[in-house]
Image 1 (tube, rainbow, N blue to C red):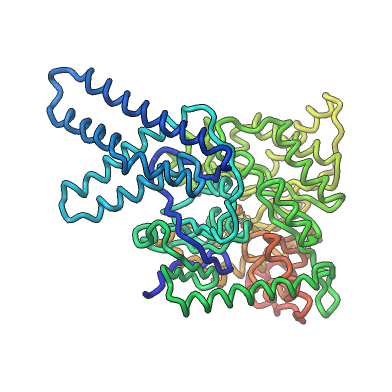
Image 2 (image 1 turned 180 degrees about the vertical axis):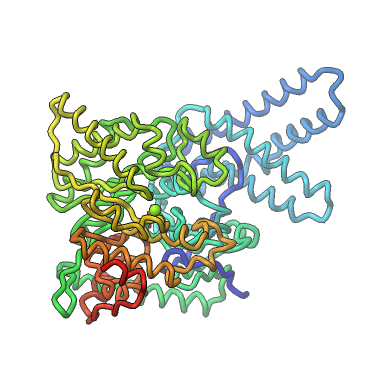
Length: 565
Ligand code: PEP
Ligand code: MG
């Protein structure tokens, strides 16, 4: 069988059994349970099925005379399904044998059944797939209300590697997957710098996105090989292919182990330039992986992940604990905390969510600093938490999506107010915390010299810079082939920004995915870049290139760059 082709979103080889995520509209949590939790989870499931049955019986009894006969026939079909062992016994089986939590077991069975109906020739039977999903959702709704859900446990053991196959995964849902062990991901949709792909890379999970129709082609429990380097997905591979990839995975492990030799050596070019290698993190505990790679700093803490996938926003104390955890762990090494970059594909569940639903184009809308300046109380809550953490180590504040001088000015006003509020409370903080901006909108890169006087440093967000320069939605699989980091326009903006910052004596780093891509390391060094921030998993490969690179500075080739002088 020919492999499926998608986009290589996160390197590595994964071999495992497919778990096809359901397309049910109700949120489904996926986790393993322990053998001790099994009985209680089975009872919760049975109770939810019983409640769904009662609900339908009552619904039927209360139907008025006038309702069309089709409606009661429709309810009867649902009742029949709810009594069919195929709907109720198989999930119990998955709970017992696979140790899936009840919602996961049910959604797996529902999805399988719905697909079987979808594949039938008869139109009437094909449409029954909707009924299957509706019945599944009815039970899931009751399950969500049932108390005593089992707490997540680790996977039942080696040899049970699972590869997630989904239509799409929201960045917030990826957080849930962070808690459990999966071998890799395949999605129908997505782009290589979508936040879902970014989280997959940070988890060091091989991932293929934009793999058209993966959820239709791949069946539950198919054996999959994901080649996260080429974007190929092999479904039920023959023995020869399997052996080849097992050998490749082994080779890769060997290479990684060899790279550990340079872990404690500095990133110095043969010409003697010391390069800073920093880590990008999404959640406080990611700092452990950064420390394991012996990074010089945290160059980007994407704080919005603390705000996503929850109904209530974190208060000042909760945020302080999260920032303090990272600052203390880094023990004096700098931690650059980016203020909330919410919007576009990173939506809030909380009350503000309403905006996301109506924004005509969220990537160009009330995102990041625009959102924060529109919600100053929430913004200052975050600023106060960050400043409190600055009493514990070296903290820098990074503002996302800056395009205008006045946005920096307004931000600085909020920062001064936050400091005053802390002073009034007698809290300790570092009054000299440097404030920098993400340069990720082309206008900011072009006008960098007008912004720099108000900034202490700059950080190039190449993911968004590419998106906005080329007018390509970074999460849209349809136009992913046009998302080209090496486009001359993108390269000129990056070069112009780096050279302008160097001339002005303001530190500049790259924290977009280009920083961790070995294809661009030499070019960025030639542009004069001295600081790279990336996922901890990329640090050692990039360090090995830096230590081997003799990179004469680029000639002043671009008109933009020469204009900077
Ligand atoms: C970027 O845009 O390059 C960046 C680092 O930020 P994010 O990917 O979180 O938008
Ligand atoms: Mg960005």
